[in-house]
Amino acid sequence: MKQISEAEKLCAGIQEFRPEIIELAESVLFMQQKLEESRNLIKDQPLVIEYDNGGGQSGIRENPSYVSYEKLFATYSKGLSALMKIVSESGGNTQRVSSFEERRARLKLAR
Image (tube, rainbow, N blue to C red; front, side):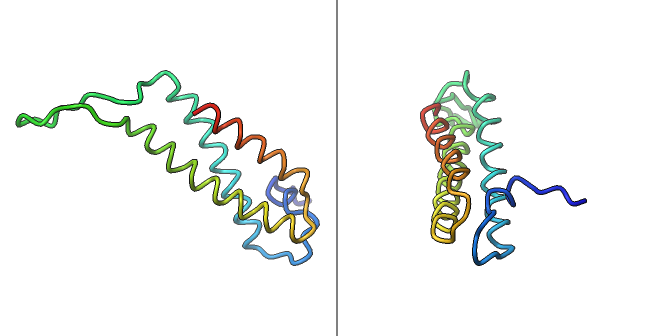
């Protein structure tokens, strides 16, 4: 018996079922997991760090961990918005998508 993935559950009820929608849902779920993991890893790190490239090049720059988190969050938000639009317009599981929107709000607040 095939196990139904979280992405397939999220897309349940979509009238025009396409594999691309499942792939989008899987990507959103993956990014959500990575955001949660990285938030826990970087929460105690400073926003800026000192650097010394040698040869007299030193200073302060943005922490690359936060820069990566911001980029991933932006991509995640775009993917989630696209998925929400598809699901709501296609008769999918909007209640499940709403829980993802709530998680996105929590991730944004935690930044």
